[in-house]
Length: 197
Image (tube, rainbow, N blue to C red):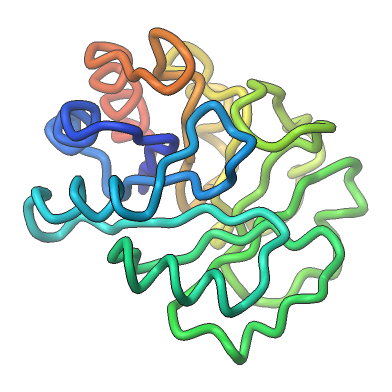
């Protein structure tokens, strides 16, 4: 199972996440977030990362020009996009992207096309609230292109074992405090995720 650790704000956390076995690192380009990072700071971190680690920029209700500009400047390989009003023209993006669906009810999981999606529990704010999607909503669904986010920790990953998710995305579940990761929590989280086939 693929693991993305989101909300990276400093180089040490980035290196600890990679050493723990994370496949991707997430950088939050949403100014109201306590995990916000400037494109310049993100670029400095990315420039010191080893190869074969995917860098992901998180954007909230932004336009194509800003997403393209930030991804270029910060060396992001993937844009993770919350587009609540569905006004973004994805054809104008210069970077590969994945859509975030903020799940309010089971019907939000119906009639999705065959793309990869990142699924997070709906909250009034954006990101890192630790709220979980009801797992029973995934019963009888093909979850092989779903990346699950929201309220995940090393101690509850076993609960998703049977669903066949493509990956998991964690932020607050591996933190000491908002914006500061715990090396041991990241190690424990990735270890548990790797035991899910």
